[in-house]
Length: 407
Ligand SMILES: Cc1cc2nc3c(=O)[nH]c(=O)nc-3n(C[C@H](O)[C@H](O)[C@H](O)COP(=O)(O)OP(=O)(O)OC[C@H]3O[C@@H](n4cnc5c(N)ncnc54)[C@H](O)[C@@H]3O)c2cc1C
Image (cartoon, rainbow, N blue to C red):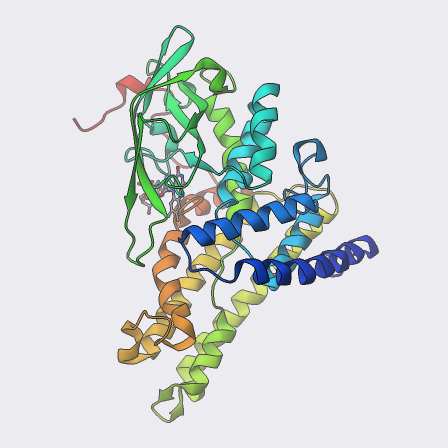
């Protein structure tokens, strides 16, 4: 493991810092800091993405011919770290640029790539990922949305759920069943679709945080062209694995307060004998979080060293999400409980630290599910890192139409 930037990496970091200092200030002067989910917030996000694209800082590893930066994975990580410090970041493009458009680049024909990649890099168009369904989440290959061929077209019927950003997305990649007569992984096909087609209905899901990030999406006789297919008919699982591999890298660690913010909070909170920070049990919990945070930091260094050497991080990067998402939930729980009756306040103007812990408490359970639940990630670590025997998969060779459904 190497903890230091190489001379080239240090030079890139410095260049990125200078660019960010100048451009983040100019961006803020122009757009201010609009509240989340407002049209102004979206406009600011698109403008920031366009600014990065013009300077080669959007999609740093992608070819310049597609509007990318033509850089290396480690440069992309370095820019991401510096951008987080500059405090300008918007989540609208994470799924599209992190998962959907890389899938289009890997499996789309030339015309499709020419049409879609560059507008996505510049932030002109936003994409969403339509995989999960009521009957197919962790086991996404169990999905039931059907596509039936009709000449040069396909007709799609069914329902997706938990589709992040479907309500503001222009396009999406959708995994559907095209052959129910073969085992579940073999009868899937991937397509791209226009989210504004009238046969696509988007219904927002309201979250306990007050946010509306996800949607149910219904397809009623949605007609699409065969040229919208990504990969061969029946090869959708192979295509989905490329998307999901990118998802593991894109979801990464957790954003939110860490043990340092809890320490700061505990200094001002009354405990049994003086500030809560003096409480022995509280201090032990803080020490555990500190130890975990150090473990996470060095695991990330290991990933960065692999990237710096031109290697691809392996399934061990799943460890980071399990630890950080669970720690975020635990930390938010403890901090909200320590605030006693004030813990119920969720108004940023009233709650300590602008309600950062209350927000994390409501967000952390989702983080433990998105991009693979704790249990699924533990299965991955058990099988692919530790070499333990595989999970029981009794329906692997059964034709999809013969799988028991409970009906
Ligand atoms: C914040 C967030 C954003 C999301 N965004 C999207 C999106 O944009 N697009 C999209 O398609 N989906 C999205 N999802 C859905 C997400 O992919 C699924 O919720 C996830 O895959 C789990 O599926 P499920 O909810 O159906 O739970 P299930 O798969 O039904 O799991 C239920 C429980 O059973 C456990 N379990 C399941 N299988 C096993 C097993 N083999 N071994 C042990 N335990 C098991 C799980 O760990 C879980 O505790 C999002 C979810 C969240 C929380």
